[in-house]
Length: 371
Image (cartoon, rainbow, N blue to C red):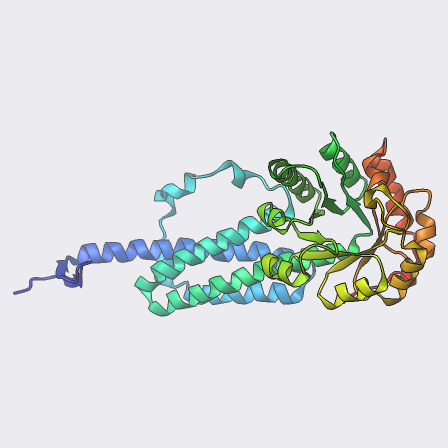
């Protein structure tokens, strides 16, 4: 005869008696876990929502965050709140040095996306003990938050690309990081890491450091040619030459929200890059340059063609420096890419400031906007 209490199955399917007090104790613990993680997820979403609203002014993304917060609130019952026991929670004393500082808006957003996603995974599992429907709802929400993260990061990259006028392509040198940082201080917002001679170990270490540097200055970081390296260091995208992998394959590997650029030397290559889904193109070489040894200059005529016919952001490139930038601008360029004029400059910050100032002198009607 069964005595007072309640009955449950153990892992082997055997019915065992569990005293009321123990069952209730477990229930209270589950409520506390659900309460803590509902708070954690809602707080993280609010932090992300504030950036969508005030940082980038995107009403749609802000609304998505708010909608998810409200759904979580609907699961946050009075029973869960009543089980809260903050004074006796050992987790309130736990911290980590990485939590005490944020190096950039991007690191702040990524930290809070991770926070939300981890909390939702906990809610999904423990929610099954409370209400199976809660587990299902949190699982689906977790997938939506993954998409929201990709959309927000992709949106920010594309918006910064549209605002970027000057694009630095690096060349190997001893003071690589110092030179790039000097240019970033001068207003640079777009950097491509290019080194055709270094081994993979060096490429990886340098790319990691440049990625961190660009994060600190809120600049886009692109890797030349190597999709695998771009993924390894979480770069914002990759730049492909005409002989590199097809854009469609790179897109499959990188996903829909990273940037893909393509070098073009004539109108046919340019139109093909647009049709294949490039986010931006390089137009050149405008002048002969040792960076593209043996390649004939495309000339200012190609710049004028791009100004009239290119429907995506494009950067004139090849031998452009402070002495000829205004000729390139007069031919129709609103964005330029440089290598030697900054990488070999005695004062990279001042050169960057000058180039940026010339590009920003372009009249608004000359500057094409892209949707």
